[in-house]
Image (tube, rainbow, N blue to C red; front, side):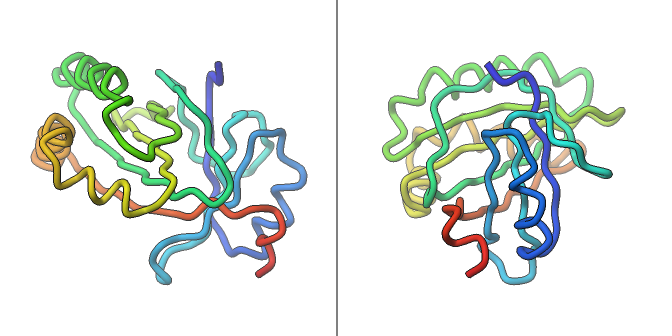
Length: 169
């Protein structure tokens, strides 16, 4: 199992030069919004970067495939909520089979003083994730989104996993 992962943000051209030097698995991600930077997602956690955002992997299952949609959900939580949060995430992982189109779920904790978690999910299509958000199966997740937003912060963002032949498109 992967023990750590890291992300690096930048232009598509810059990250394209880095990705060939990163241990696999690593992915070049195209943002859903044109105002965001591209991301290099190093699932090996072993790439050598000057300012990566590093996460210790708490749990992961499944695989990420080229062409999939990846949703990043960032949760800033307080110390007294951490156990409740991680127990809730266990329930999300256990319900994975009820999420049509899902490929991977990874939960990581930022290697920083502030308690920040990232939940990374990959989907066959972006619509799979957004359809799930409108179902009762998503309610447990919404609870943690709301709680994190009230106590420290929550945000999410989506990307497309580029295949190597798309790196310079």
